Every structure is written in structure tokens, then in C-alpha cells.
Length: 297
Image (tube, rainbow, N blue to C red):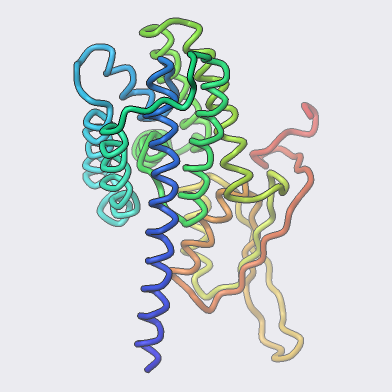
């Protein structure tokens, strides 16, 4: 009976995931096919890479995107294993398919070419797309997966967000070389708006730093993930329950709201009896904190 209820709960959650992901993919496809491409714009990520390739090959955007997304999936599978690859498998198939569907209809949101307005729209809609995807705990399998591969395989000592920043910067600069410097500047505006909208959709209007506290029997595994995959520091302390009198080890870490969701996903998979608390923090300063040094800020 318990197993049946658990199965029904997982089925409902998966159905909710599919509904939200379909909505997110439609918003993202609308932004790319009906706003970005008609106005000659580009962006970061594999969307930007596909736009660059479009300049040289006469192939539909959806086909180029699918080839790039599937290549990243294969690379992730080969270098990081199926456990990581399966996180991006669903959207690797779903998003290019919806892009292809949207390409079959002739529509443009803006009646006249206005690149500034178009890049703002792209940032808002693309941010909503990525925010909903992240909110449901999935990954689109874009340059964030490439950054993770680079970090885990070659640059383990560098923060993941910095690697991702460099990868997207290379894509945007390359788009500027191919399409012109003004397109690169518009892409920067789109990327900035996109990142802000992702934060609002996925995390709400909250602080950019959170304190995560976890009490779990799998704290060592969780700490290893935070240290090696997220590049954040971890502290352990011993606490005692007032009711039982039992002692337990508590894990404490400071991270971004996005990373707290990634931690929550891991905790839910490895220990569903764990207690996890997330508290907003206004500011963090200190050497090695990863957020800012006292003498500089």
C-alpha cells in the first residue's frame, strides 16, 4: 500500500514536471523563433552557438540546436556518466522538438525591427523558460553542462559560475565577430535580463546568498557534493536534540539560491528523512567565502 502511494506521488510529480517543462519550452521557443531570429539577434549558451552556425550553413535553427544539444548529451554521458546525462535527456529531446514545431508557423512578435526592444523581450521570455526549468529541478543541457564537464574533468579548483561566465563570454564575443559588435552588445543585455528573470522566477524576490543547514545520516556524501561539485565551503558542528538527548552532526554551508535547490535535490534522493533549513543572508564577507573579501568590499 505504501509503495503504491509512493508510486502515485511520483507519477503526479512527473506529470506536473512535464506540464511545466512543456510550458517553459514553448516560452523559450517563442522567444527564439519569433523574436530573436527575425531581428537578427544572438545570445549566449548553445542558442548563441546555433545562431553562429546558422551564418555559415543553410540549416533550420531547430536542427542545429538539436545536434548541439545531443552532442553535449553524448559528451556528458561519456565523461560524467549516465547519472549526470539523464538529468538533461528529457529537455535534449523536448526543446528542439518544440523549436521545430514553432518554425512551421510564420509569425513575428514585433511588427517592425527594433533590436533593443527585441533583446529585452528575449531576455524576459528566455529567463522565464530557464527559471521554470530550474524551478522543477531540471537542466536544459546547455553551456552549464559544458561548464560542469570542464570543471570536473580539468579545472576542479575553479568555481563553476566563473567557468560558465567564461564559456558564455566566448560565445557572445564569437557572435559579435560573426554578426557585428552591436549584436554582441545586444546579447549582453539579453543575458543580463535573462539572469535576473531566472532568479525571480526560480527563487522569488529574495537575497542572493543563503545559509543551508542539514541534519542527515548522509552528511558526508552531501558535503562532498557541495565541496567538489558546487565549489562551496562546508562546516560541521555537533548538536543535541532537547527531546531525545541524542547527538547529531549538522552541516552548514553558504551558497546561492540556485545552488540551494541543487543541494535540496541531492538530499531528497539520498536521505528523505533529512532535515534541511535555508535562511536568507544579507551579506557575506571573508577570505575564502566565495562571495567577497572584507578588505575589498
